[in-house]
Length: 414
Ligand code: UD1
Picture (cartoon, rainbow, N blue to C red):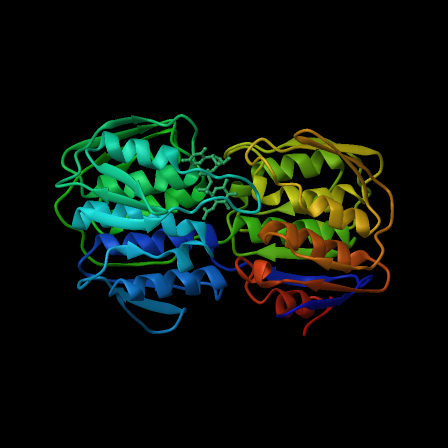
């Protein structure tokens, strides 16, 4: 099992280019199931979750060829409409095959994702709304068994703006009969990107990026070439790393408007930044503690909570982070404490007393974004830290040791 060895204390300099967004690429990959024509995806990142998705598509009969720089996917001859447990358990996003399969083939069998490290994560919003579109859903032996002669458009009111449910229902509605309206839809940029991708295959979706999405169902989708958006979460991780290491660092290749909530928190902390349309440069800054709460987009993203907490450990004064999206997303806290942080947990909030230096330690990754927080802490800790179980990190950060090494970090994979 791979680990990272990091010797902390190096200043970073130069430019970090972020890869394409994992959370945009996964639904887009599963969205290819909706079309009988060949689709080409440009500049996909080399990540474990992307490999898992391609494996799943291939298992169902898709022909996938070319490199990640220009991947061609042909879902004409899908011969299996099942996502097995061994793949779903490694990647919850596999649930996103449900909408496309149900819409195009009238049936889908997907292993129930179950819990994961950051909480229970049910899929009730997906399932109850598929039922409103005419599907019959049975839970049998750990599997979701969904069937529908023909999905019909419906008015759907989501009880929470779930990202995955919005994507799954939007994909299903593309080939449903009549119009679907999704109220209280998630507004994340990755949903806009998915809608843009589906529209370029011929779908008729409007309102993406707002809380009301309208989809006029059509008979058939065609082909397209699509380049997914840059990864705002990877970008945020690098921005926070630049500030943590007191470096002058440019982070490019993403839309800075997708990180407005983070930038307002950082401005309040006193961060010096130059923000352009597609890149941001951070400069050495004296930082002070602030309060932040995770919220659905355009609020502050839960996927950046752990990394912001690491930065708060080095800011002057007290900071508070409240986690409102997931029930158990503070697993990085005990590991950060082992590295010298002063953090107390009170219910949904973490109270961070800043100003202490991180010290090196052997630490263990528990989930994807928690891993990034530990890498950040190790980059400023005195001495050598070993970070184990980095398969979590490899799910969502492309070549992280190479990218950070190129801007001056002392980091190696063993
Ligand atoms: C997506 C992202 C993930 C991010 C999350 C929140 C992908 C592949 N993953 O996950 O990185 O952290 O959005 O921004 O894009 N919920 C229910 N019932 C449901 C669905 C969700 O109760 O049917 C709850 C979840 O348990 C959770 C909250 O809603 O507490 C948010 O989940 P959701 O927005 O669905 O996140 P994901 O799509 O799983």
